[in-house]
Amino acid sequence: MALNRLDSFGIHQITFRDLADKSILGTGHILGSAEIDSKRELIKLEGGSSPYPFAVAPSRATGEVTMTFRQYDKNILRFLSSYSASTFSETEAGEVAGSITSIVNETGTSVSDATTGIASVSINDITTAPFGNYIIKAASASTIDLYLDNNLSNGVSYQDAGLKINSSAITIPSTGATVDYQGLTFTGGSGTIAMTTNDIASFSVNPVSNYLLNVNHDKQDATFREFECFIYSQNVNNKIRRVHIKRAIASSSIVPSFLENEFASMECSLMILQPSDNSNPIQTTFFGK
Image (tube, rainbow, N blue to C red):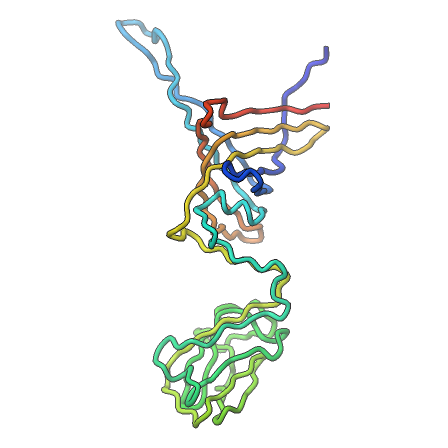
């Protein structure tokens, strides 16, 4: 009989399955690691003057698993952090024309004003409208400066250390007229523009996308969910190892760590629990040809 060497190489993926709703699956492709610590401390039972213990009793297993994810799907997030029905806001088709939020006053009340300020801001050309979070600051009674929190879009050039993007002040016209600036249209109020200098308002622009997901972290009505999971090694020379953890709960840095010139990583700690039917908590299987 040939000697079967029980080796395994690398890691391919981990698949989570909800214990309550068996149809819910989530997959993470762990390009980092999955390290299972099931060892137990050995407690020495000593007595008398013997130089060695008379016996050793193993303590409880730590049951900890640490994982690093660099690629994963939406459903995995419901297992790695607190979750409720309102945790996700998903637009599967994305926003084919981008989107813009309404202008909101932040300091003072004069910038966003249907009569004497800016009545609205809209997108007239999404290809040239930079995406991000904007600050509008009244430079005078009838002019504004624009500030943007990133320069990832083409055409964005900062003019000063305050992240201003316009080289000269933008004049807001009176009586409902409009002025265009870099893909955006500013509509003036119905009356004569009379903003208060240094008052501030804000709005945001989303880029064109074919998928959009907002995740709300640590919502007060959210709870942690128990699950089972399967960890798969890579398939090398037709050899695969699978580890089945039958009941667990996890906590993760759902907000990923951003790394220089690498995919963002998400660190996770998982705790193995005893199954409710008191069966074996972990099963490992080796497949070979």
